[in-house]
Image (cartoon, rainbow, N blue to C red; front, side, top):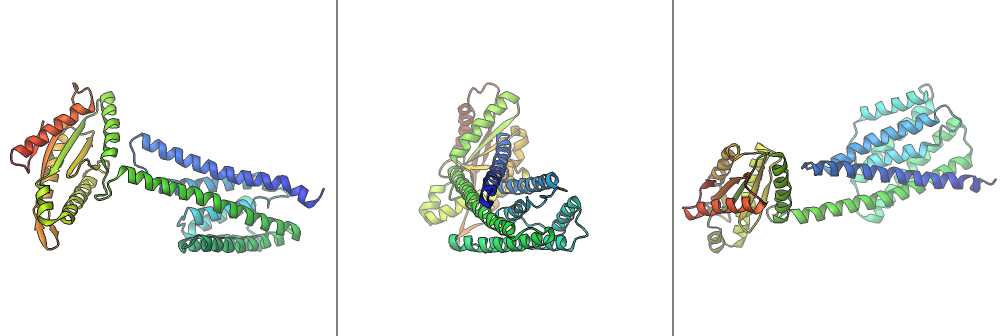
Length: 376
């Protein structure tokens, strides 16, 4: 059997194995993100992908190393170790401290029983060096083709040194070492194309999701997001009996601000109001969000709050806006809000019943002098 015939099946199998590893990783992280979202959480997708990626790669590397430990082919997963190092450092951009890498090295050397071999220590040093080199290369990305060349050069040089050390220590034949270097280049290139496309797709989806759910001017959630969240929380409250309080408010005399100072000042008032209230909400409860549901109309859903529990927060928001310093283009602008608040009641058949009542309370505040809060 010729050399090429002997390697066709292992090469193809290894390729599909690595693609399967990446696909399973992506599937697992997506399921975890979806799990949190279904429970009303707002997970940090990047943090989840990073943490899961590290645990996933460590477990896989330990597993495959244990599978071949003590055999005549203990070197067969070297490319997978290179693959894991590049994935964690370049694609996950993980900032691992030196002592953590050293601990991982000791773990693998303990599994292999190679503490007494100088070349094993040299291999470990090069592997750690590859991690930091790929991290630096990642930080200096600027152009697609140049980025690929930098990635290829750094990973290929690292692979050549690592395979040179392994070939020397295990007395592997030169053709075998050259083949493994070539195959390392092949799988790292496939990984670059595959993972980069996944990451780009995820970034595009995240941007589309943000655009769909957030107001461009104020950077708070928009009416579309409010409708979805209100529907979900309304149904949840009807089933569980947990309280839900709705706060609607308008910026008082906003048309006068636009007519007097111009629309740029009006935009400033909207964005600054949203920023102040968002900051206040984060301080009292990170799960609360502000929604821009109209031109100068905003809404807050107080999940798991009765009106009595929300009362102090609502009043503090109104008082905070009234006392805030709004200055734009040398002009001092007095800003206040009119507020309507209500709580989901047993008799409410739909979301419209709650919203209509809050809206009526809002207009009561506006008809009776503005700059006040009406509960009901």
